[in-house]
Structure formats: structure tokens, C-alpha cells
Length: 293
Image (spheres, rainbow, N blue to C red):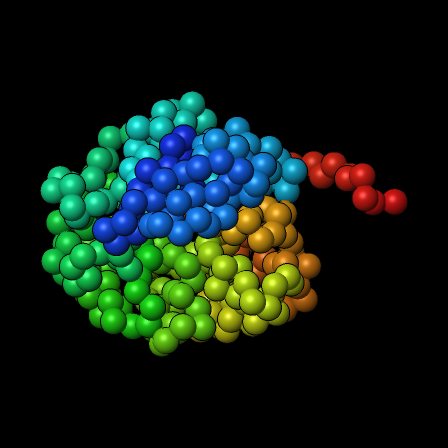
């Protein structure tokens, strides 16, 4: 069973980067605060990134379930995510979006967790956002969080993780591996309720490209530091698919000889299934593709 612990979906991209708007265009492109960027694969037309195309990618790659997180650059997708969570209860887990500028607490009903884009907070001191952790604790939700590069927010996250030990926390983007004191973020997973997921790691090591040998080595280093049971795979679909295919975001781990079969099984699915509460699902049969003999 394979679980993607970090990806994005939206019907309309209408977010912000800092104080500048982010708007979906066509051909997978977006106006990213005044700069045109290839936000998605070019076959995603009209600025829309719906679940049905994701599911086709997942089926092809043998991925059973996915965790749909959110980002301020995409805009609030609560309404769409709540609807598809209800439509696909076994296949998806979804997070509501915390937006400090909105002046209201994030939604919990119909959601599995809450997303904090900590690296984009106007007030980066996490202790000033403790109410979100309390809300998660009171409502039995997990928290997905992406920290600023380095260790500037690590101490505050550890304080909150200890204050709310019943709240499971998933640190995203693999602790911004390779940037600043990234290992401090990985070591937060030494706390019993903190895990780390690697959504975005192919972005962090885009310059070396597939099969991402340095990314493989930092995952190996993290496993040796916090254990293979505290780490989870994530694709960061569809943004990273502007450079690689969805299948490539998974296969560079599957084909690596740096991990045992059991470590791969834990990293690619077992840990996420337990963390996010996915039901047991059967392995998806692989279909031979046309480039194979």
C-alpha cells in the first residue's frame, strides 16, 4: 500500500505570495505575483487541478491514497476539498487552511487536519499561533506544517508539540533539506507525535534531477537519525510535475538500493497509513506501458 502524504488540488487558483496575487492561467501556467511561472504540467488546462486527473496518475503509479494539503499561494480550497473528501472517503485525507490574515480560526468539520504555512506567516513566531494547536487538540485533528529554512522555528514547534502531545504533527518539505540547519527540523521527529514528510524534496534537489542521489542520501541520513518509522513519502503534485512525472517522484525511492524493502514499505505507505488513518487497501496491479518490451 502506497500513500502520498503531500500534494495539492484546486479548482481555481487564487492565492497570494506575500502581498502579490497568484492567479491560475492556462497550459499549467500561473501569474505568480507578476511573474509567469509553469505551476503545473502543461496538460492541466484552464488553471484547474482536479482530483480526477490526480487519480489517473495515482492509479498508473500504484498509489492507493493521498493527503491533500494547502498553500497560501493557491488560495483557500476548503470548499472543494471538503466535498471531494466526502466523495472519496477511503482515498483522500484533507487539510483546511489556516490564514492569519483572515482573522478566523481554520475549519475542522469535514477535515482531517489543519495546514499552517509557517514559512509564509506574517508573524513567524509559532507560539503566537498556539490557538491553532489547541483547536486541533480539541477536535482530534492533525497539523501539517512547513517551517522556514533552517532552525528559527524549531524550538517553538517543539514547545507546542510537547504542550499538545495528542496532536500529531507532520513537518513538510523534508525540513527544507540542504538549506540552513535542516537537520534540526528532522530531529523534531524524535518527539513521539512529530513526523516528517518529503513532499517537495524533488524541488529542493531539482538542480541534480532524477534519480536525485543527494535526496536519497538525505533521506538515508534522516532514517538513521530518527528511525524509518517517522518519515513519509510525498510527491508535492502537481508543482513538481512541471519537471518530472508523478511516477518519477516515487520510483527514485523504489529503485534505490540505499533502503531495505521494509524501510521502503514504511516510508512509502505504512507510516502514512497509520498517521493519517487510512484503511487497508489492496496493492494496485501494474499495467505494462507502451515503451516496454
